[in-house]
Image (cartoon, rainbow, N blue to C red; front, side, top):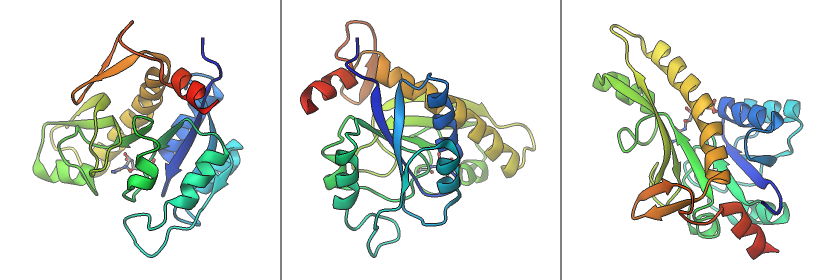
Length: 220
Ligand code: GAR
């Protein structure tokens, strides 16, 4: 049994529909943990209203001078430590992170990306796939490592592109797939044993440790 449900933080930058899907799952008690804080790098972003409506603490820590990365990750790390966060969930967080945050959360930070990685990393993944003319695309949940939209894959969901489909329609269907996939993947990641075999994340009984038990023991 777990010593306590995992304490989760969500990082988000914009609309926050993935935050909403995660928060809705947490409210239904099917996420495998509770969201204790939402950190946002853009004051005024719609995700802040969503967090307020959901009763989740939301904060906009300083970001520094750069547009695409956090210059000073220390205040962010401090907030996570203060709240005893076990796992960080990136949900439309559009800045690169570096060692200050990545090292302490290695193996404990997930991201969702709207393509079947490693295809189409980076910005506008849905537009990239649509313009490329792929027949199948989708979304990916992966462990975060120090490279753009990269890391061992936790779960993927495929979305077939329909004949003559508009970019807008494809985008809507990929977002729907993300909203179903991300909470499911988080729950699985938090509640089932898993191990890494090289880059491959393998689930299975007896395969390893339960992540949040280990972390709670280490923190406690
Ligand atoms: C989502 O499609 C998410 O996968 C993507 O940003 C969107 C945020 O939407 N993230 C990335 O592209 C990360 N590289 P949301 O704010 O409504 O959740």
